[in-house]
Amino acid sequence: MTADLFDTVAEPTTPWVEPLEPGAMVLRQFARRYEAALMEAVRQVFEESPLRHMVTPGGFRMSVAMTNCGELGWVTDRKGYRYDAIDPETGRRWPPMPAVFSRLASEAAAQAGFDRFAPDACLVNRYVAGTRLSLHQDRDERDYTQPIVSVSLGLPAVFLFGGAKRTDKARRIPLAHGDVVVWGGPARLHHHGVLPLKEGSHPFMGDCRINLTFRKAG
Ligand code: SIN
Ligand code: FE2
Image (cartoon, rainbow, N blue to C red; front, side, top):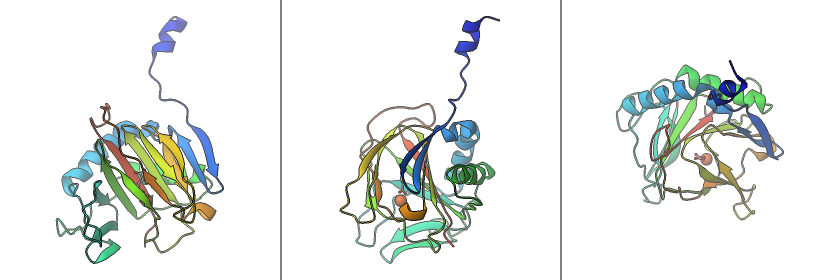
């Protein structure tokens, strides 16, 4: 075999770590190792608990389409934000967290210095062209010693990562398919969001970006 032949073999890139600030980092390309299994698992979750546009307590329909898997799912409606074991759309429990999800989340957390992360909730977000997520904190969980692990799949996006105050300047971090952001410790309650998604197409799932956000909620 020639050297050229080796060069053309499509190997997922070796992941690398990009520190953001104390407690927060991007694990570039960390999810690529599981991408085939992730695609299958995401489709399965969509079948059991379909994506929907939830309504905020203020009465606005969210532009991000969401669903959940795991013991608990994050929901919002006119009554507020909370975690619930039951999907209000199906009246059943959320689909169980696929093994590849839990494994990826705890491996990413460990890589970022958070040992024994065992998420009980995974919020699945779908962004299409124009979809955005305004700056917010993840604060509906019980135990802030546990980090947030956020996996980007499909189309790229610009992630905003700010500070403890909503008015703190937010950094713009480009995220690509397979990148994983972990924030915890001193950065656990930092504000974050996503700029409007640009149009495009990606082999993972077409014209959208899928984000998996893992939490220890209960
Ligand atoms: C979230 O904050 O729930 C999602 C963040 C992202 O889509 O990257
Ligand atoms: Fe969030």
